[in-house]
Image (cartoon, rainbow, N blue to C red; front, side, top):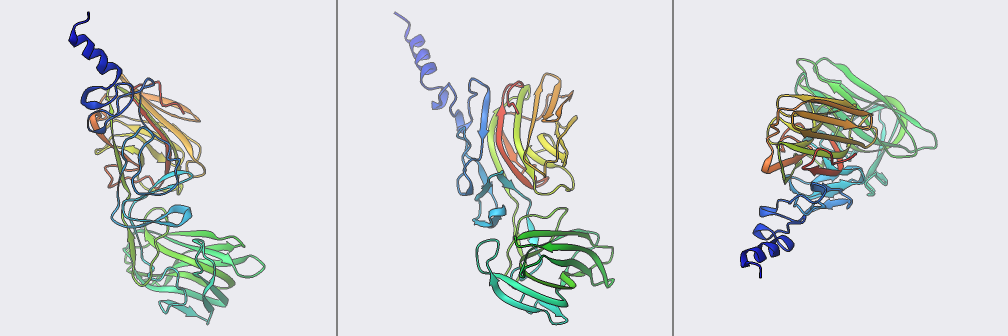
Length: 391
């Protein structure tokens, strides 16, 4: 007969582990996952789209979303409530907080929009990109329409965006522009071509020294279009739409996190990533931590990287804003590796990402407060073996 202690140990191994979690591949103490046979401790495909109130990883961990505002859910333009995760076909959307400085983003007939040479503006003349009948018709014969006196900071990048669609049978050229009141000069113009399909057009400008207010809108021209969703925001790249109806409105940061247990000594991560814009300042974290190290981030539109706090390893990639790209990093011993579909690069690893039991990983940011991805991420894997997390 086997001793009682041995029998008890066998029962634990075959049914439940310490603190009531299954030793095979279920949740350990405080919800941390015990590695499965392939060493994967976290997997999130984000296959369910929409505004998710309580997102959960495929491996069972709760994903915490902290955002103190509603948000527009990307291209679907659905409204996600506070602390809901926006997921579309390209994955979970992670963006920094922004403010739309145009106070009537859909009401071009409001007096806030100044009319020059008497263009005709018809309110609610067409179905807008979000499916509501809130798009206005702007019929200009050598005329202009602009939002005036928008307070801005000097020497700062701004993004002006607006949806346009032609209101007549032929394509229409609309000069969208931003005008600097301080110097009475045009900061930038984009001659947008409005077709029979709704498109969101972007103009990027940087205010000069001494700038205090600007105007944004459509410059003098002959065009007949439907317009909707004007937005002027400070930032290096445009973000998703923030509706306004009388005052400037803000969207808070997407702070998204989850717990894992992966050792500093060996591990891997992978994710499919798509950026909203090809140009951005700083770095765009894919899987970040509380401090400077990042297991995986995008350093440019065509480069993926990892940084252990001392060493940086980077690998070229095809444009990450043009399509979703598979990115991967792994670490073992003294080697840190970054891989994309274009190849892989190895470098030195100091053995100190700052991982262990437990650690919080931030999806698409550093500590939920900086270096935001500004894009989509899906098909995430995190494992305890450097040879796993395959592209």
